[in-house]
Length: 193
Image (cartoon, rainbow, N blue to C red; front, side, top):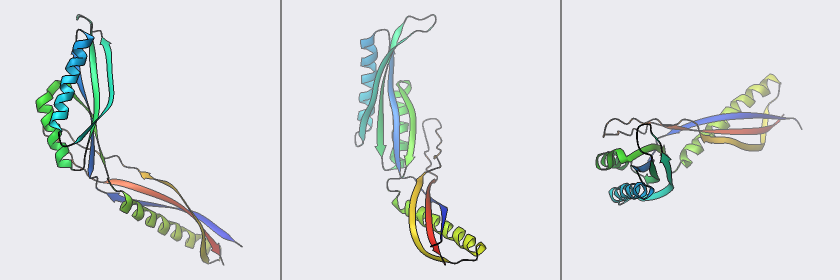
């Protein structure tokens, strides 16, 4: 039995609907205890401001600081994540934290993601299969053959390819979700007649 195997690629776009905020409560002081206490105070303010959201600790670190002309000290950093399914809530929270905590807050980043990528993944697979069929029909015609039934399908390479950009300006952070792209790759084998 003669067969033909081709790989098709598909792309689908979707709008992110979830924000994962990564931030740190930071405090510098002369003693280790003061640095930890200051970072804990800032962390407590973050938790209070995000009262209705889940705040998770990612890391707690302390290290000595040595700056020329200043006494040695310590910097404590309590890194957290806060997830929200509403981008407007993320905008409001970042503005509130910037105002209330100020320089003791470091925003490490905001990841905009899709809560349920399934519909976009299905669209990407369908596009990948259609792409594979077009290629297979063309190659079969070049070989004076016709496509028969599908003998095998293998999936690989599905994933997100386009990072989502956002803008932060002053206290109004203005998260704009834009679009993110999901890709699919299918390798399809047809029988030839």
